[in-house]
Image 1: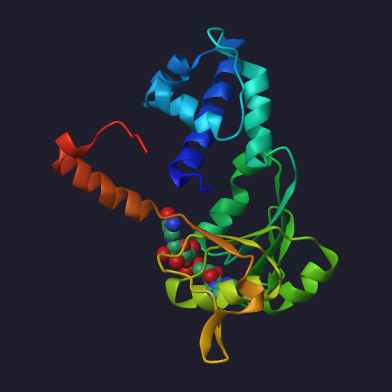
Image 2: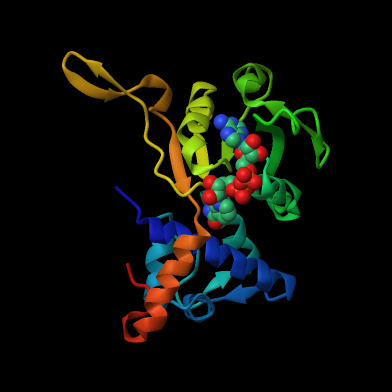
Length: 227
Ligand code: NAD
């Protein structure tokens, strides 16, 4: 019952398009219209949406606010998500200062670093705490996601701090693969308990640039996305 990751990425795109339509007071759309705006096929749009239910009426298309509301629900963006940022260097501070996240129900509840010069400082109204306090912090404040913006060689340790604190979602900006901790149990390597429910998403604009370089050199290989 898997759903392609590309489908989830496209749902985010459809949502952005619907928000744009709503802002222009457009009340109806169709799979053909959404497809054109998203750069995919109408079949793809219908297939992506069909994973989650029936949102339109045959031949009538979709009601913009209803489809938007349904996508917000499917993506879990109709509930509040408490986020901590680990690593308050250039990137971490830029993320903390970027206002876009609060348009959705993402709210920064804590900032963590190891640099004594940063600890105690305020960034966007929140004090920077030592990462060693993360676990204690989660006893009183629910934390759903952690943004990892530490140097690559520190990312694994910082991710472990998040997992130890019971944080289930890690958005990793460091260009490194985060590995769950494993334990040997009766001769088998098993994922340790604190990692079992953890999901890691990687964000890497350099990787995007590398893909772009390839596609600029090989334009005939860049086709409409159909997964
Ligand atoms: P930076 O050196 O300016 O900041 C890193 C911060 O992490 C520092 O404040 C440091 O004290 C802190 N830190 C180090 N170890 C820590 C730990 N164990 N726990 C908590 N904090 C810790 O670096 P930057 O330029 O902000 O980059 C941060 C990371 O993001 C790097 O891995 C970089 O490669 C990556 N990056 C990714 C993208 C992207 O698109 N994904 C873009 C830019 C940078």
